[in-house]
Length: 380
Image 1 (tube, rainbow, N blue to C red):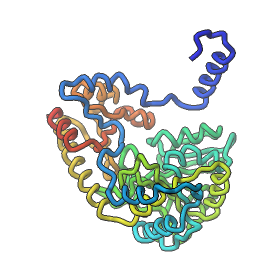
Image 2: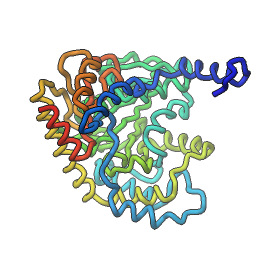
Image 3: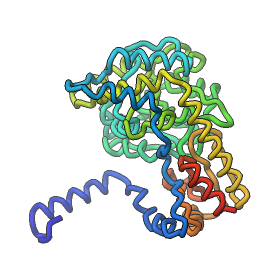
Image 4: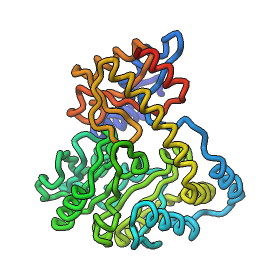
């Protein structure tokens, strides 16, 4: 940036970069770039199965709702329109079995990743506090803890944690990266444990509508929480179910006191979901047909890739839900990444999600039908 390294701004920039490096882990996807170049050199082009980003069209009714709301010159509210809160609470009751959900139990957010990364900070956590999350997990849980100076701790079973100092407990079912689903009895046990120890529980349920060999259940289901949202909040996103990753449409639902605190903080921070996106979210939550159609696309891609990977010598573990296959050839994950890159296929190494994933890779089935077919042929 500055040609003269002695320039004070250059020195300040260097100090800033070093400070960020101390606070945060290295951005993992940068390590994948050489393998991406290898895969891209394949004569028929790359098949990128490394990131679970939607590739199919945004449903027409959602696009139309966005267009119809485009003339929105005023500031939107942080808490969302009445129509949006009605749509979210209706979906919670009808889809999740959360019969007690009301307007005070919901809050729109600007994409779920933003929420995950900044939640510990917004809750006032810091040095001396602990944020717990699964041993194999989405990296942003750790990032959120480190941003506020809290201690990040991992678990295999959260009820076996030493509860001392744990202020925030993350669940993730269905799991990213493994696709593992916590059943209703497990959720009941974990919710009871968290409440017993006064630990706030946030459940990341962004893949809940993508169950294949299991039926995911929300912590807000009446049978799990007993009809009370005390101490529990669920996180939901429209990125996967409705192909709205580009819209940053998401929301949290649960304990009204917790959401009220977050609302006040987010009002001060101006963290508002754009009005056209709010309208698009209303349309998406009110329509089940496009969700079923998208599930059908993913189911076909999943079946094709699973068959091809198993025939190629891979073993699939968990993967009963979500948009990924969690697979291994019983070798270091980077060896597998290199092997598949030579075939023009890019996947995510398992150690991106924790040391326990060091012999696995995560294979997304969010590529187009044509690219999935290409991957199947190469694996054959």
